[in-house]
Amino acid sequence: MTTSTRGTTKVPAVLVLEDGRIFRGRAYGALGETFGEAVFSTGMTGYQETLTDPSYDRQIVVATAPQIGNTGWNDEDDESGRIWVSGYVVRDPARVPSNWRAERSLDAELVAQNVVGICGIDTRALTRHLREGGSMRAGIFSGEAIGSDTELLARVQAQPHMKGASLYEEVATKEAYVVPAVGEKRFTVAAIDLGIKGMTPHRMAERGIEVHVLPATASAAEVYAVAPDGVFFSNGPGDPATADGPVALMTEVLERRTPLFGICFGNQILGRALGFGTYKLKYGHRGINQPVQDRTTGKVEVTAHNHGFAVDAPLDKVSETKFGRAEVSHVCLNDNVVEGLQLLDQPAFSVQYHPEAAAGPHDAAYLFDRFVSLMEGQRA
Image: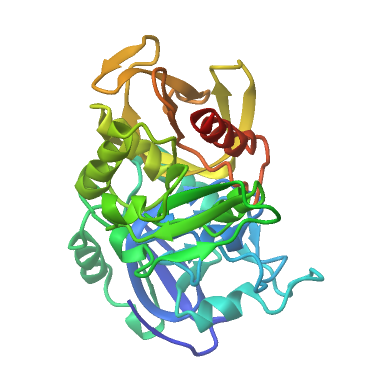
């Protein structure tokens, strides 16, 4: 990605999709060019949490909500230390942010972090196109980066696909760090950072858990050096079929029967460790309004999602694995995609969505309590 930071109010920009569809609008954020997989997010709010979610690495995110930027940008709601999206696509950017917590505008933050975007295009038409054709490679070009349509299309088509991409190591922490428990410490958890969101260890800390966040390449020896009561595998970007290292680590954790919890990428890792396959969804689930049923209780939750891959596990039967019986615990009510797994003979479970609820909703916060219950049961 190359960028400059000149004013972008009336600078032309184009979005080029790999199938040849082109949208023309105005530059938003930094000027230049950027490439990534075009995906859409249906969240009506929470764009700051979306943009700073490491799971969006190398993706150009299309906001389906028509107006973006109303609440500006602050220094409290980031889910990581930077914006991870490759590019941002909005229809109608707010001219002036209006929120008491805002410290600057979204546009200013995109410029400051050299994120190339585009505005003023028909994002409804773009979203319908991605639903029909699937998520696809794309490029945003603005200012002097705009060339002929033929040249720009060729450059987009030369970009790597998301399928087969190994990205979790490039977004994970390089050094271990500790998030202390809030109040009295009750448990210690080793959290494997595959692209972890900042709210996740915070939700555990609220429950008296001291969280040791470890690099994606952590060994079993490094995990058990912190004497964990439980092990957590985080969300993250890329194709889970490439994550052989995390799968091997999780296999060791399962062999030791340590309480285990996985979110998003962590759910896919558990699926692989149990012997299930994974596959790429046509256009994925991204947003904060996805209906999921917890099959263990029958309850339907409105949940936050960000995933383009899923686990291929049977929905209506208990599977025999080398770690005992396993079943699908949660399912998406829109398309029957597997949204959770659990082992019946040892303390391990995972979900495909994001119960840390940043920027909402809060329906699935109970899953952290379920993890606590597993650790309490193991200790007893």
